[in-house]
Image (tube, rainbow, N blue to C red; front, side, top):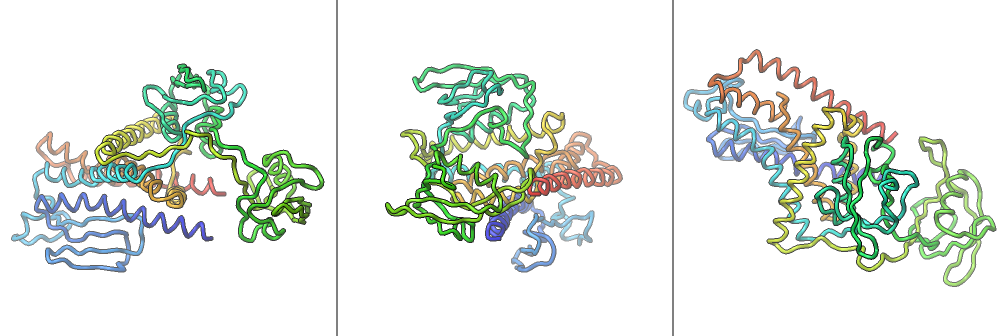
Length: 450
């Protein structure tokens, strides 16, 4: 329940920031173009806070935090007094109307850059992309990747950490081959070719890396308890952080992984745990908890281990000065923008499955997770979602900013506005398509958590 509330709170904060940024873009340029803004609303539905400014704009925070809007004076929907005719949106030159509409997505991209710039100033802890194990006969194994190899480039893009590797690997969905450059422990570089014809990536079951047969390096788990869950079977048995696990049901434990296998396969069973606490041996009785999984019931103890220390140089921090961070943020923002466009194109061509679409539940989970890791990770998450919000809003669907821009571009080229009947049908078709996409995304969210 606490995790749900945390994710919900982080989601509301993230969405509130991104909606405010997007709508402020429309608002600011509209005001600069002399358009009368009637209302600036964050959220929909009944207002829970409102304030009327001297300029006549009503600022509102509404109950449903799933979007927002800027309502401008418009002769197509309002009775505009003659003295305010020059302040109506529909009476402005077409290039000004285009600027007002494009400003929302444009500010999303600017905000993403700013968030990443601050992230690089604060510093983001990350890990070198060193491979720990390779699945036999996998795409990575056939390509020639070896345990201990560091992935330094995918294609022409340098990959300093696993996040960069993930982004570049995903960008190759639908490709025949991908060029991957690795460096071994002797600093010898080698360019490998991943054959992707038979690459089947199911985001509900695996990560892009595991689908290629790659397991990132992580220090091995020890048999010393690092965390005990509140109210868990481990806590009820009396386990404490710092306890060293020696044996399970009289059998000496060789590794944490072996303990997990035994626990998972024994839901509801009683076990004897031999431990060492403060140099003294103890024996504890525990009843393994049950939990439902797609494969059936599995056992759960509610305990996690401590880990061996990271080798020197594996963990580093992306942190730069004010000027250098600008270049890094610009490059990352541009890459997120191009990758988002690539993914939309591959979704249309069928190279990317509609199962990859995510809705508000997945976004909320992502917001909660990133917020839990700290400010730098939350800023990175905000930048990613802000870029996606900007790109999606530029799609040529009449319900979105891109649809309005499409009509205005036609008007700019022909010198005549698109007939209202055509616009009306466009809005209906666009609305149906948009709700279909939203429905698929929400269905995918529900499928992932059930």
